[in-house]
Image 1 (cartoon, rainbow, N blue to C red):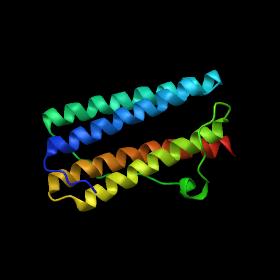
Image 2: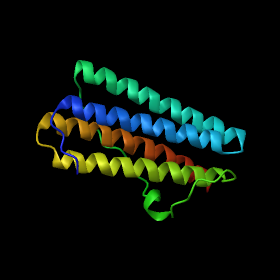
Image 3: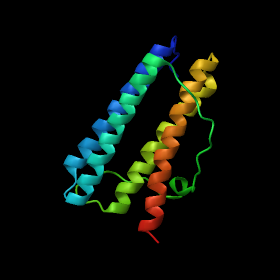
Length: 147
């Protein structure tokens, strides 16, 4: 696991992760054939840019942590992974999103546990919580779509 030496290094890592997420959702938006799915994915890509902007502001101003817990429906653990496909349906898209956000949450949680200082831990706790919120949105939508 990467060892971070400074707050700025962590923030740069997190900002780059948001850029990668933006690129992932943008690529999927360009990949899918159904316009409504492309529109949803484009919206997710824009949200990732918003997170990038938020992280850049936090890097400049410092951070504040809200210790509120995020719920978990547990759906992500019960569904099999899906590979992106131009003809995938909405449920498959939601599964891809859930799995991606859960992987990011786990990464940030592991980095928080390994953090050497409280400041660094707080950054990763915040990032893990944001990813958990994203996953929860996908799980709620999945629950509605498969009900």
